[in-house]
Length: 428
Ligand code: GDP
Ligand code: IMO
Ligand code: MG
Image (tube, rainbow, N blue to C red; front, top):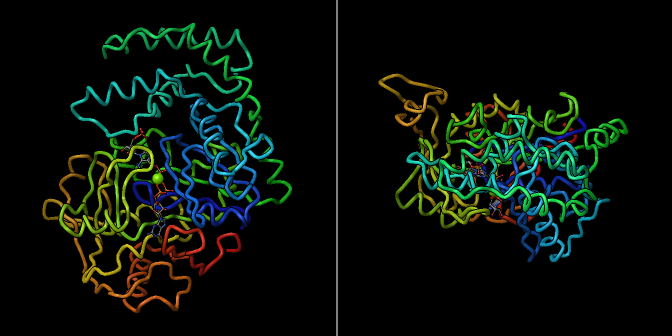
């Protein structure tokens, strides 16, 4: 298979960035296809740590990188991130980065709305506050400003008027001051040339690349349980995060997804509100959070931690068409005497093998666990399957059985090269 699609199989932060960076030297182009700068992908290479939110992780290895049409783009953030990563020695020029000219923009008014809603809501979602949801609302509502509009002052003026007419009552209702259309126009015009330098019909370029037999690596953001259709709605993000979105969000045909590689953390975490059946609030949860350094890259919030939920990942394997997985953070389980794996749920005396759609039901599930022996040896930084203790191998094998997909790659530390490959997704 020529292409690989990397997606998060849980609630995000599975280690997608690390794996995309590692895989990108086998690829010709790396493509983001959904989400925005709500993502936080951390790459560790030697003593350098790169934190990327909007730029595809391929930039660090100097690969051609594409921000596809399915992404919502905060243009100020884009320029800041290019500058920040530039200061770390990664030069992101228009030769290296393509921004889809039909991608929709995140504006300051989207961020205002996101934050004001979160502050006001009794049932807050726990968003990243970066305007992602409101920007997708305007996209679907056919009011959004797109990258190409930056080159057309008349279009920009008309669109801003229309957008402000829609936002005015929303802002009033939330006690926000009236938005200033002229100031917005001036701010957009000030950055337009810099942003437009990267703008291209990304679909066209990608189709050329694909026709030439080049390998495309798709980089998902968030995770399947945050998918707006398939996730724990309404505690989700506002895009489709599943692998099927890779084609629509890039303009490559449906066959382009190729090998779907699910990134799976050896336990479970979630940031923000919403149901989490295997959540641990005891010292084991604290161990996972501390050893795994589970703090959000974008907001710095502590991530909630819990046991591995095989039922969730099994569902994710089906929803994404996962061919194989990269299991990450196995090392964080080092030293735990006993490990639990959730194999399904109990609800009202019934057994369930999947996560039901209803929010109430999701909140009332009792996980069914099986116990496994832990290991006292260190797996941190292991670079060979042979270096793993027998109990760790047993854990990995049981995970494979329960989720119904093989472990193709195993990650044992944040470092790029602490990665064990059992199967090459680009060759499978
Ligand atoms: P992403 O959003 O899926 O890219 O994941 P994040 O980067 O937000 O979170 C994953 C965190 O775990 C990052 O800090 C990584 O450096 C780190 N990480 C990735 N793989 C491993 C691993 O195998 N072991 C350990 N200990 N940390 C890892
Ligand atoms: P990466 O790509 C983990 C969560 C937020 C919140 C919900 C909605 O690093 O895995 P949003 O700002 O998207 O409207 O917030 O989604 N969320 C993430 N959680 N990892 C992410 O990205 C996330 N992006 C959004 O915490 O619960
Ligand atoms: Mg993250």
